[in-house]
Length: 220
Image (cartoon, rainbow, N blue to C red; front, top):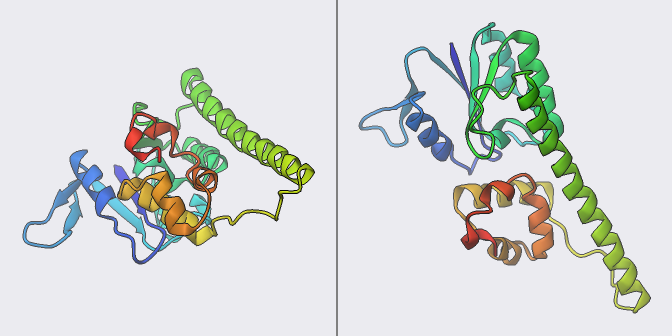
C-alpha cells in the first residue's frame, strides 16, 4: 500500500504544490472540472495535516496518528518534500525509527534525499548519508551561534552593540519557509518583508538552502 502524507502550516497556505508533485509521481489523480481537485490514485491512501505547524513533531500530528493506524509492514510512506513531514533533523531520526520498527519504507519525491528508494532503510549507505546530513545541519547551527557571539563581542568592544537584532517569530519562520519553497521568494525579499537581517532569514531557512544552491536567483 502507498501512503501519502501532506502538510501546510497555516490555513492560508495551499496544498497545491505538494499535490502537483504527488500527481507527477502517479500517486494522485487530477479531478477534471474541479478547481484544485485531486484524488488518490488506486491503491493510495492520502492523509493531510492542513494548518499544522511544524513545531509539532511528526509523530504527534493528527493525520500521522491515522497513518500509524493504516500502515502495515511492506507499505511505503511518501511525502513530496521531507520538511513537510519532519520539523528538523531530530524529527528525521524519529520518523526513520518509527518506519523501521513497523517495516514501512520512507520515500521523498523532491530535494537532496529524493534519490533514495527507502530513506528509512538501515543499510550502511543510507545511515551514513543521514548521519552526514545531521552533522552538517548541527555544524551550521553551531557555526551561526559562534559567529553571532563573536560579532556581538566585537561590536560591544567598539561600543556599537545596541542589543539583539530582530529575529523571526515561529509564525514568520513558517511563512518565510513557505514563501521560499512555494513562491521562490529570495532571501533579500524575505528580509525586507519581515524587517530582519538576511542572516536571520538564512537561519529560518535551515535545511532548505543546500537543496537550492543551484538556484542563484534565490540567494538574495
